Length: 109
Image (tube, rainbow, N blue to C red; front, side, top):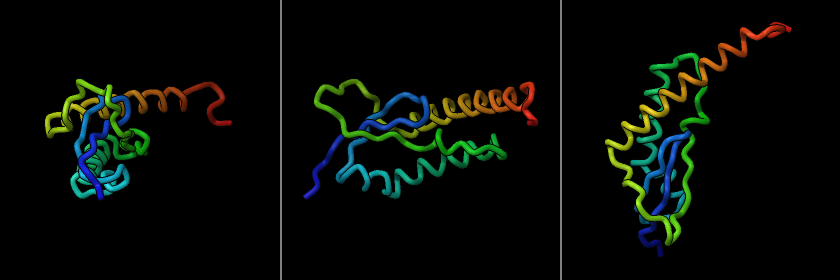
């Protein structure tokens, strides 16, 4: 029987947030609410960076919280907006690095 567990979640280099969920880590990952968050983040990045593949940014890192884990903010709609802002900035950096890499000497070899 599952009981409420607290998980620590982050995306890319975003801050980490706590999520209380009645189920396992995999159940959280595949829950409708969590899938919607991931899909919203993906849509946001696709809109701003249509040619990029940013799956590494959108892939959530989820771990079960330890008893010593304190002070994490809840994953709220405001937190998701902050994560979107962070991921956009990371996408801009990745784009700039890819552009620099493609302009590097001998890049056409």
